[in-house]
Length: 156
Image (tube, rainbow, N blue to C red; front, side, top):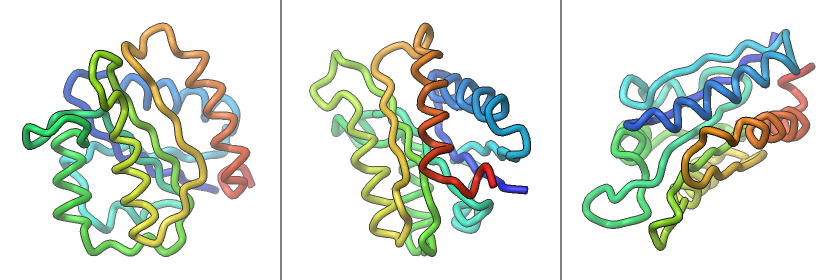
């Protein structure tokens, strides 16, 4: 049975809402898929290696006073606890949220993709949600199908 490990960070609940919507869509499309969900603040480097594929999800923040950064919890996980992690060619999905009121609307995507590629992972599919995620459930469900198509081992 295939396992997708989801690591996410949220402060407002928006990222968790997107992740939960995605998980529901994945379970409907691939009922044999096991999805593990974990908050970034409780994760260690070894958690990035759990499962057959990894999904990283973060909103865009002004961490450290600079606009366009990762959520602080994801930042600490990736830049500190997992800075030496080798993803061993693991297929990865990436979700970034953002707000169009800011110049760097969803720049968390850039940071997440950079982490995956610099740590020997394979970005299989990426997804951006701009502004409130409520009302964008259909978009998330469609992306779930794309993710499953790009990581066929999840439905094997």
